[in-house]
Image (cartoon, rainbow over all chains, first blue to last red; front, side, top):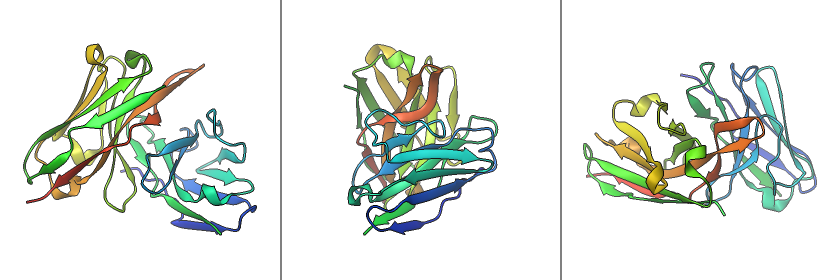
Length: 108
Length: 123
């Protein structure tokens, strides 16, 4: 079955840039999506279609995709950005969806 | 305001059945793909199933194929997940989520999420 691979954890100091990667063989042809999940809460969409930001999401969140890797970048990370981040995409058929394993972002 | 409210979770014995429901409001239900996602305790998110706008397309993760059935009722603005032959590994919070629509059309990828309902499978 198709898999998306993320690093388990990323740690930055406040104000630094955090980058979270997601690798998958179908990413050259399928969009990547990114979700933020804070403890005890439902996930929130922060990036869709590789690089688009939903309304209400701060500009410090950005996304990119190149080849088999998608990247979520948080420029000037804030303490309130501490959360688990999940990438999401489809396999080559477009019908089987999958989440990456998640990355715990620590900002301290 | 988009609202998704899940219900139907609870404690079920292995091999049992349960139906989850999700009532939607604040948008035109029949315009959107709908998805079920689950999260086992202290684990990551797992896509379970999704269904297109008129119910003619349904897709499932391999681990639930043949056991779970996703459906929708536009007259009731409701999404369902019928779960049979339940196993301990199905224990999770189950989230209902709505796909987004943009200028390019409507996508199956989730935008809005409910708060989830907890299913526990245990004897």
